[in-house]
Length: 211
Image (cartoon, rainbow, N blue to C red):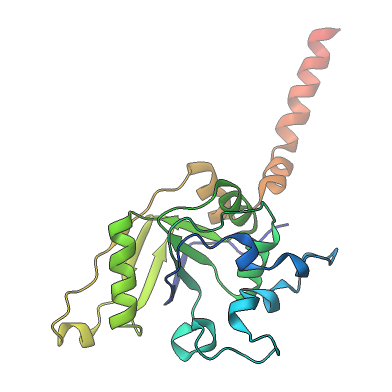
C-alpha cells in the first residue's frame, strides 16, 4: 500500500530509555486477533501505558506532555522477539514516523520500512547523547532530513543561554533502495508495479528469441 512520501520531519523526541524492547512489549500478543491491519494504535505499549483496570499510567512517557512527538527514541536492540508486523503498524498508526535506536531486529526493521516508518540506527554514544539532551531539554525540536541522511537539532536560545552544549548533528545510514522507496512513498509491491512495462518488454523480447 502506498504511503506518504518521507522527505523531512520536524518533531520533539519521545524518550523511552529501555533496552531490548521486544514486539510483545510494543503490542501484546492477545491483541493480534483482528484480521484487519488498522486500529492497533490503541494497543501500543499497552501494558506500560495502562494499569490492569484500564486507567492510564501517568508515569509512562506517552501519557505525559513531554511524551508527545513523532520521533521515538528507544533503548538498544529495539523490536526483538517475534516477527509480527503489528508492532510496526501500532507505532505508525499511533503517530510515530521515526524510531531511533542503536540496534534493531532485522525483521522489525524490514516491517517498519515496508509501511513508511523510518528506523534510524545510531552509535551507542550518540544514543546516550540523545537521551541526555531529551532529559535536560525536552522542548528541543529535531529535524530528520532523509535526503541528507541527517538528524539535526534546532538552534535553541534556551540552550545557548544555559551551561549545556548544543546537541550534535547525527548522520545515519540507510539502504539506497529503501531510501528511494521512502522518498517516493512506495512499498515493495508498488515498486514491482512500476517495473511492469520493463517486465512486459523483457517478456516480449524473450518470446521473440524463443521463436
